[in-house]
Length: 225
Image (cartoon, rainbow, N blue to C red):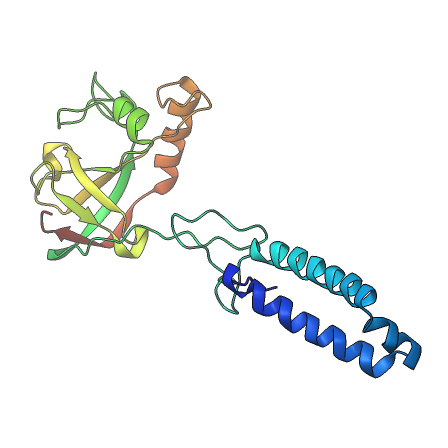
């Protein structure tokens, strides 16, 4: 149903009257036609017609006109109120294109916050940070240990982890310097949301051991943002 402007009421009422007179003239018996054109009959039916037209117009005035295609069938505009039974398409934030300084092949292993794999401060890497605080704040931490790049350098491993960016935030034993060796930091978030419970530490240690040794891994060293 399409809405009509208020100023069209008078024209619509007049058209309705003409249509009503034509209908009575063509379809009623001669007696009925004579009754229609008597003063009383004419007034009675015109009043009914006017009342019907006004009610119809008032109802249609509050219904907005909708043209085909004005409501998308598979998406809702960002910021608009969701429409019932419509599929809402979520739009991801635009990805920042990162320039690559250079690439190299490395040998990858993994470690966790185990005192036997680190030192007396298993949650404190070479950078001034605490893995527990970072995970509590961000919900994740992407860290590798490596000796041949500056701390804070960002890298990617496209063949293993796609566009995920890792940060060089820890160091390995000095004997791995210049050998192209890296260590992924593994952790497990427990049901309490922490990574330092006994169950989380045991699971992370097992995952790091299961990772094994991966040789010939492509590492992209990224330009700073």
